[in-house]
Length: 240
Image 1 (cartoon, one colour):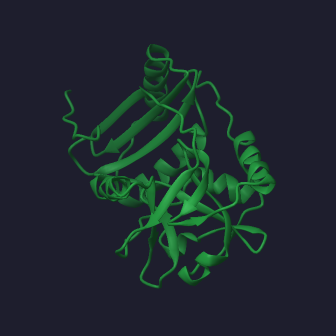
Image 2 (cartoon, one colour):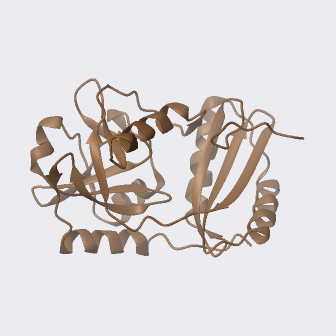
């Protein structure tokens, strides 16, 4: 069956997806990603292929295209399973963020079409930034267009709660469960108190934040230690 894709590589029908980083053909946190997909599928009424079918297809695609660093994408919808694996270029520099001017409603499921998030990302890049910090109706920080956020405030590493309108990201979960990051609401009034920060996502893993607007953040020993700890808990594992 031929699957028609949009300009971003997603099927032209609503569904859920997982984006997974690969190293030499080995995915990072595959089990966590699949658990999230299964939970979303159950809540949204999407029937997934059986586990063995997914594993066989994954093995075929990863064996056919072994990149030093890759982006694996799994898309699921009713009667549809699309898998792609493309080369991914590592981001070497810290990120520069601005603030998105409108309230954005967050989702607990990773759904496509994803055009609205890519539009936010493009708007930020058109203004010379890498991504935009989003807020909810309570003026609480939530996430960026494509990543979760972790900030160091008053010496403690914190991340916004899912109840603020945050995608339950895989790397975010690892940071909370394994790396001592606390969960609490972060109001926009606290922005001047932010000392350091990270964009955390399945592709970035943990990318330090250099600037929020014209406010320079510290990238010091505490940041290096947290980044190393997060990466240590996210090692690639062979599918077979």
